[in-house]
Length: 570
Image (cartoon, rainbow, N blue to C red):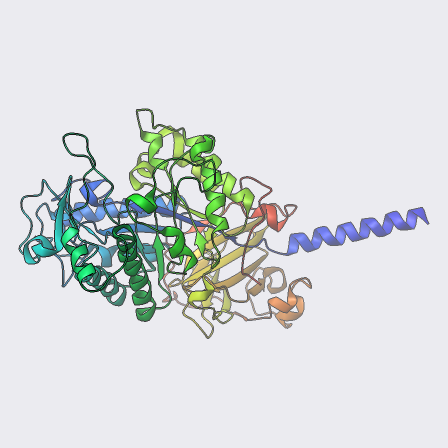
């Protein structure tokens, strides 16, 4: 009897191991983004007035680095101060691009259109980043004749080091929303984004006394018109109206485009109780908790630029607090103070701090993501940053789905197996099914050492498989991150020659996943002439092999190994 039980147990263990080996790991989900700041040439271009070709080369280098690190989004600042890094019908070209505000690039090009095109070729999302209220610096002396400071001086107020558009004037709100909606309408952006500059951060005069924002006349008009709010509440209401109008404007124009906000990392001191510091609610009139709980953003990226350990501004304490406020179940993808690695003063942190912060979020599970500030730091890689990120991002990841922006699932793709006529490499040809347009493909391939995962841009149709591939699973992903059912190819059934099999493929799919991976595969013999489909491989997210003995949960990320993966894959 005992021998029979041992034999039965061994048989079950063997079957379980085989099923694990035959079933692909889920595709990881994590928003991995970087802010690309253009104001004062923080990240790009490296200086004003470069040639078109130099500007393009620098931008491509940043996008290449993002793709090589297996990031999946870039947030490009395109309206740093009532100006434009794109061909705007309303606002002048930025001085940070051409060296003089209003001067068009020559030879002409549209940086936003170029960035969208090149990001999408690499499978990266491109989010357009706007500053709704900043108009200029007080040191600016050559504003274009089409700039708001010249055309509508009644809308702007000098404040400290800045010239600021008055948030209390409805015309300012309309201008900001118009700029955002215009970009959403004319460009294929994946998201729009505003940061933490609402009312300006307080400044002091030469005597050290706080300067009040000069909006008394605007407030008096509000009161004269019957308004009853206190001045502080009125200021918060002005910002609330902008955020709500911006969100609704984007929704009405292209419902799948994400709206992101990156407020100051603390809502108010005392939330949670040990937190001390700047009060963004009272000082810059930003009620970011309200925006999140009203659903006026698809993702909130509080700027959690503090380390984990100090309790008064703890990264993890604040992250947990923000997650607890997320009653609408939107995305919480905090900003990381990656720039502090390059600092040479008391603000310096080691790169291991950023690693620990990412690990701390992964251990908590759920909807994961983060944004690095800034692109220059990733490009310079202080303290071996990129090498450490390469370990963290060893496996590519999809952006977590946003089904409230569109829940339709793409149709299961058709996958054709083909031999390259010149090299005899095994390739697959992927064709979309019905339903939403394919934004990305996921390709999970089993080889003799385990599984590899690749995330490919949706425009790609032909893909070369790794050597010694034995089976492959392909899914399509929509613009809102919803994944199709998988198509499955078993190369063992097909044989090495790539000739058509003599049996129906669906009957040979692994039993554990047969119902989810019904056959959508056609086997093509090698063509007599070269295929017209391009075989050039773009920069893509590719994983190293995952051992068959690793469970899907532990395979989702290379570090740490006990993190559960989240996926909408069937």
